[in-house]
Length: 174
Image 1 (tube, one colour):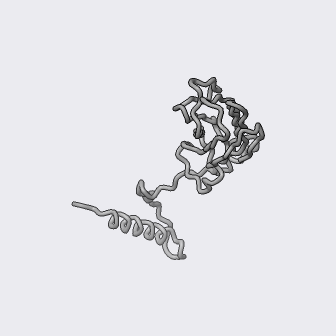
Image 2: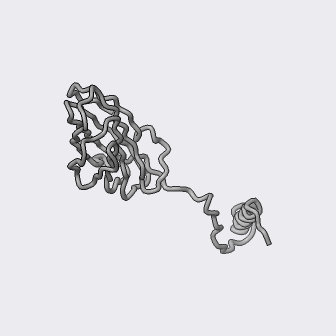
Image 3: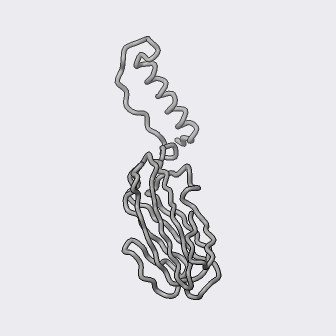
């Protein structure tokens, strides 16, 4: 016997209607205990977390500094978030990184934030001081979330940034 997805949904809808009628929701009949109606895997609601990253970037000579503040506006609290930094200029060899970061390639660094509780004001702080392979006039830094514990983020604009950083030593905010 082959059961199509449409037929499975129709049976689930009929079971839900029967459960509503049998519980007396419309004022008729006795309450009857019924089991939960199974929800197909493709219809389950994913957890939601609104992760945001803000901070500033500074370029001086071959030195590049990135200061990041990550927050979660909820409602779920991911156990960890992975932030990706991509640079238009390659880094000079192996870099000294904080323990929560690793150099994925000559132009990419990945960092984990640890737990981000929903609506926690403090969030997580991260500072990177990197050395570039050459002394550019400017660098483009792209920051984004590559993993947020599998949660849905309906506002990804506050965790994706692209910053043009001239070699002035000034702080460029994102």
